[in-house]
Image (cartoon, rainbow, N blue to C red; front, side):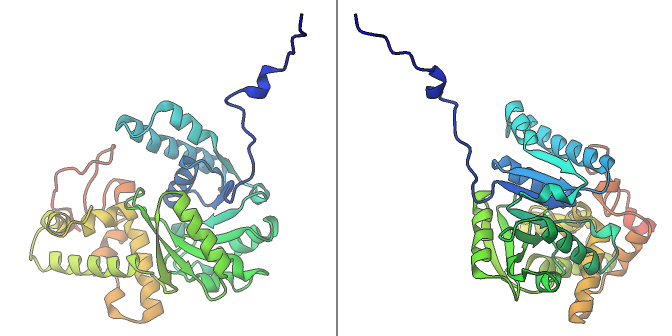
Length: 325
């Protein structure tokens, strides 16, 4: 009788895979506010490990809860399963220690502008320096800033050619485009690697020459200023101006709804930075925007901006809020 050979069945397990390091195995995010949460969720959705840096345990907890809530919305709309959510959330970790970024291939700075002043260049430079201290020499360091140029942020680093700028859209987190900016120091190799990252997360690259405001912000703030002027002149109501742009010109959100989603304080900073950069009056914030910001009516996140919102973020019937301030 022939001898029966016995081999461990585990060697043939279908689920057994050798997990090797890929081009973007681990992504770091510094700052996990609205933009940082969107970046972390998108990267984890596409199979990447994500570690984000925040200032306190409370902020870490809040960021994790917000990402989970966003995924719950996808589940409710049949865009995700509970199992998918668990897998995505298992790939996202929060930390207060920059050393946890050490194994990242790609680190994106996305700090909150509203916590550091209008021209927060020095704060962002400090983030870049702290990241460079812990990551490997071939790791890419990027910013999600739109009105601060990457060349200035990279100017004091030891390896400047590793730095690049890219813009994730917060008004529509699932927008399938990302603006990617090559700075004065950025190498072609690094730029192409970042373009590969964009494709890996199922987005199209919009190549942009280095300029404060890139494409989207420069055009949007000009539109919003003109929309405010049109409203203050009594040409049309707030709702009808938005409806004209949404239905007539195919925008997903009109200029006022978009401003509320982005945050009016952030929009005003964009305008102030662009006015400082270019000196053009077209970037001067409208008096209406200034009044709303002074009144702390900052948009959807606080429940009132150009519109008023319920606890679920739905627009409430208009009470002519603009004329009340």
